Image (cartoon, rainbow, N blue to C red; front, side, top):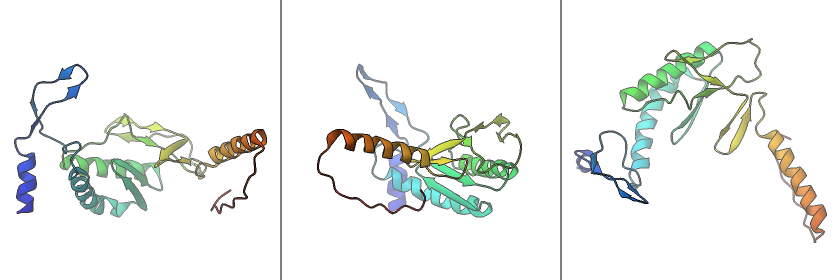
Length: 175
């Protein structure tokens, strides 16, 4: 019964887009989830959970949050294979991998130069990327430089204010 209710929400669905100057003509919604619906994140999670179970088996680990996916592989060849596996699985379900938003990074790189391709297009190589607010760097560190900069800024502010301060102790897994 619940499945039928959800199907009814999506069959023959139509919408308009509102903006500052008015709204568009009504048009059919043929792909995707209803934006703003409380049910949409749940439906997306169900699809991604099923999809990740079949695709992740070949990767040492995979991190996913909403529509961001981090795939770990031991070589460029494995990266390309895993990207292709994800692309195929997503496309079978009406989704796609954005080549322009896809990046790769080599951690503690020993190999020389090389490229990663997705459907013939070269994937952009980066030295760091941000995932859920944390910077992951190609030297294997996570946000170390930014933490140092924040500490320096805090020290400068403390020197300027000269107000009563409290000792704070923070336990970190890395310096």
